Structure formats: structure tokens, C-alpha cells
Image (cartoon, rainbow, N blue to C red; front, side, top):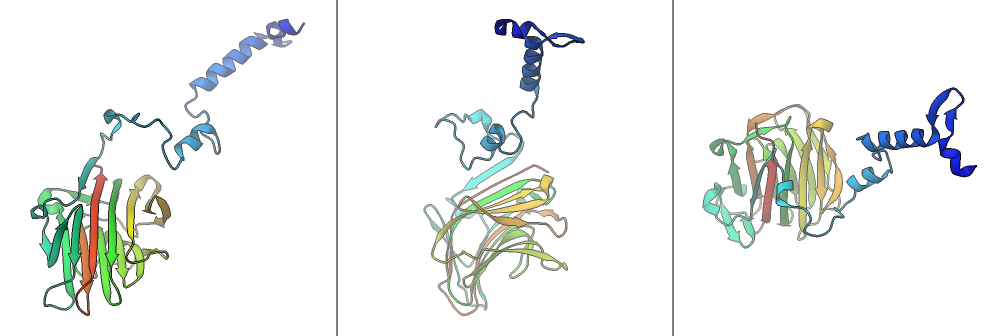
Amino acid sequence: MLENWGLMTKAQDESTTIDEAIASAISAHEADPESHMGVDESIENHRNNETVDHPAGSVLADKSTMSEMEFTTTFDNLDLFPTVGTVTQLWPGVSIKTGGTSTPHTSKLTVDGENNLLNFDTSLEFLAQFVAYVDQETDEHARFLYGGAMGSGNYCGVGLKVDSDTAQFFAGKADSSVVNYLAWPTFEPYVTYVIRIHNVPAEEVIRIYINGELLGELEWPEAITDALTVQFIAESSVGYGNAFLIRSFYFSQQPS
């Protein structure tokens, strides 16, 4: 009797057999693009893994992005970057130290998007990542900006401020009524960090990662569109010795 169970109709008023109903349900499940994507289901868990668990070497070149521009540098040629003050090439990377005769003492390295025809737009997805070491003490400051033009103490975009041993990320414009901040309470000077800033317009958030761990999220207080400016700044109001060491810098963004 059990061997013929699948040949029975699934209801008295239904000609479909149990085997046919099961086969139909399996086919519908396999054709459903949302299958196994619910909370704690297999595909959703796979997508949220901290590391990609495919075999080493299995991600081929044709899987790289073809909808975003990508740029990477270890600052091998400083002639390509406008600089102010004491900016010295390392390998890999660059050392930006306070210097000069004016007060405050300021040194900086810039990516000039206006001359390079690169734009900054908060409505487009972008990712900026750099490896940094901050050597500074009281009354010394380090700055990173990804956005529009920024003078000393001004912000237009998203970035990082380090004042003495206090660090925080920011998003907005210094001359507007609102600049949003995200504290980095575990920051320590004399430590190397991998810092990632990811703008996700579809979710209206900016995600900040430190060494692969999510620190938190920021929101744009207003939309910003400008020529892209990237700046790394070391500044001191008391003297010399502050150093902002950048080992590498990577950014990708949608073309505009």
C-alpha cells in the first residue's frame, strides 16, 4: 500500500497525484530566486559570512566590478599628488609630518579630482579604504577627507578627525547647520589600522569599518555634489613631530 501512496490523488476532488504535487512544489521552489534567502537560511547566511568561503584562487578576474571605477596607490610617485609641508615617500606609503614656519604647522597630501575630472556625489555608491598609523600627542591633529574642498578645520564630505587621542568620523559640511559625527572610542595612537568608509545610497547610510569590524553608521545631513578632493593632513598647534603615515589608499565609485 505504501509503495503506491504517491500514485494516489492528493484530494478526492483533485486529479493531481501526490507524486505530481510534490514534483511541482520542488520545481517551483527551485525556480524561486528568493529561496533560502530568509533570516538564518542558507543563502542569507552565506552572503553574510565575514569571509568568502570559496576555495583559494576561485575568484577569477572577470568577477571584478565593471560598474565602478577603481583606484589603488601606495604613493610610489609623489609627483602625482599636490603636497604642502613635509611629505616624504616611504615604502610602502607616505609620511606626512607637521612642519613649516606658520602656526598651526600643517602638512598635507591631496588627490585633486577637479584637475583629474573626478566627481564627488553623495547619491552614488563609493568606498574608500586606507591603512594608517597616527603618531601624535596633545595639540596635534590628523585629518582624512573624501569629498569636496577642505581647508584646515573645515569639512565637506566624509572623513576622519583625530585630535590628540580622540578620534571621530564625520559627514556633512562645516558651514552648514548640521555635521553628523561617529565616535571611535577604541582609537589609540601608534597603532596601524585598516579604515574603510562605504557610502550606500540605497540604504541612506555610510558604514565605517575598522580592521574589518563595523564601527557604526553615519547619515548625510544634506546632499553634496562637488569635484572630488581627497586629503590627508597632519597638523600641530605647538610644534613638530606629529606624523600621519599612510601605507596604502584605495577607492572605488560609480562614474558620474
